[in-house]
Image 1: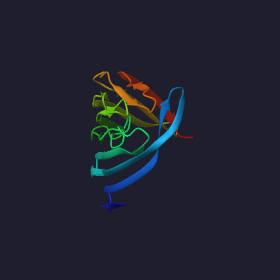
Image 2: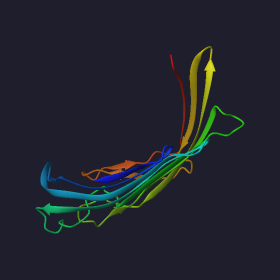
Image 3: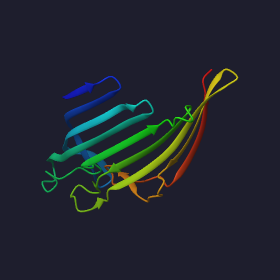
Length: 185
């Protein structure tokens, strides 16, 4: 359930949700259904134009996840593997007045702690990364062309991005520069 506010160039949403799904675990060499996981949460977003040259896209989510049924009674009530209790992100874009075809951007992403095991004995720490970028639009011989340059994880933060239900970790990307060119025909 949710509500949405639309004020023309600026909008906001607030949602509450509950999702129930089967949970599974590795039993020896067999991965099998073993119970149920419930995710309850609240998600809020704000997005749109703050001025003619400034835009914002942001969101946050608070999550209360737990194993509601389990064959392992010690697991019941624990937080499922790989589900952070908090996530937030924000991107700001700015079009500098002297260069109307240029857009500069900055983004921040934060993910809270995540458990590595169903007993909630080990957890991944929270992590935050920053990205910066620029986008330039030009008209080349009647063809609109856009050049994008982004540096992801500017601080070169070493982090574990996530863990899946088999306790396999995903390494977060190091500082990465991306250059792309696109044309509209």
